[in-house]
Length: 357
Image (cartoon, rainbow, N blue to C red; front, top):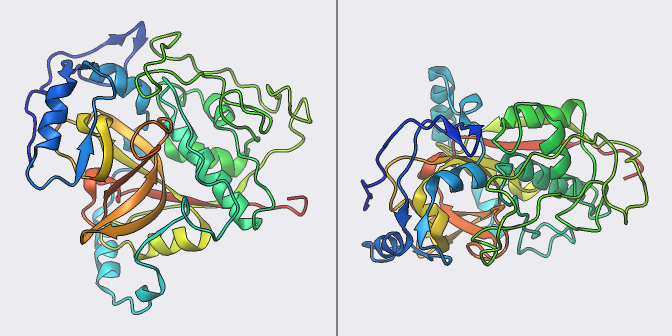
């Protein structure tokens, strides 16, 4: 593995664009062509990179607008928990053959639910809200056998979860508990005609054909509770909120069978992982870290399935950087090696369904 040691810590960053930064370090700008060349010419390449029109990568800006998970509330396992996971992994799973070698909710004909919709967080560190709303939408639709297809609002989760959760980042346990206690409203993408509260931050940036952003970092939208911002919606205020009855965080660190079974039977799951500079330029293939000295931050995504290609196992994952990034908005990442800690914290929830749904 080739590691670019140029991503060294330079200074302690106190303020970025007038806001206190959640990152402790500043990173030098990186020549995109040099990084792409390093990745694409690496020995035994499993994936390809693209410059996406970048000349230089402003890693500080990308970290603050494309990531956003505060990892410290989920990342640590106790010694007892690790031992339990090891013992569980050592048990024979004779029924593992009941799961297909390749499966993805984004490609299956098992459902009419719009699971293959790729969301775009734009220049806001809202991945924690986007991934959660997307997984909740998919699981709710699947549980109603395709009868409820309206998406749930990442706008509402972004603005109303907690003052510590915003465009500067958020906590996964906090947003999951929000769904458990208060619930959320419906709502789709920017300028969508779906649901009550549509996303108010316009897609922009290098992954949207270099569409200029109005601000360097988007402002967190104000909490509107159940008031709707979609003029096409049948209600001015959402008549109810939608909740989950339970949620669970688990690990595929030593064995991924139970996670794959959960995906296959009930729908996509949330995963969080460390992002390095090279991931920003991912275009296709099975991602393994090839460059980057230090992680830029934590990121939340939606795992929709898994597969095997050329004897390499992978997770099939929906990102939230728009459909022009990666494999039409998706990426594949190596499975079974805890690549960038993606198998360490995996979350899923059980939707609370009422008769009207």
